[in-house]
Length: 143
View 1 (cartoon, rainbow, N blue to C red):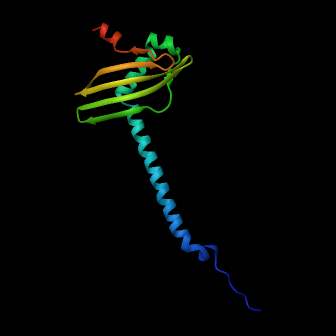
View 2 (cartoon, helix red, strand yellow; view 1 turned 90 degrees about the horizontal axis):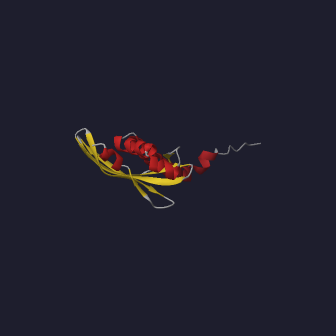
């Protein structure tokens, strides 16, 4: 009796496994690369001075606390962009926030010159009422 040795699964299917597996590998590499880039940029912006200053200003503003509640926190992904070039830069970002009473968005428009950021616009839009709460007014009164 003669035994016919059957090829392995890979031996029988290598013609389509390599192209499909190669394409799938490239696609996964691309997706994970884009994800890592987005995560990295997101982390840099969240640790930037304009982002942190805006969130702290909103959390400590009594009008925002009245509209959204005292426990204010960020709510999802921000939108916008930030550019830095040596000692100059610009920030134009929208940061979603939430509290126990509702949601809102912090709008930040700032320029960097040297070590200092100058805020042209810094306000919260309350989602339910579309009310704009200026976060710069109180800091300007003290000047």
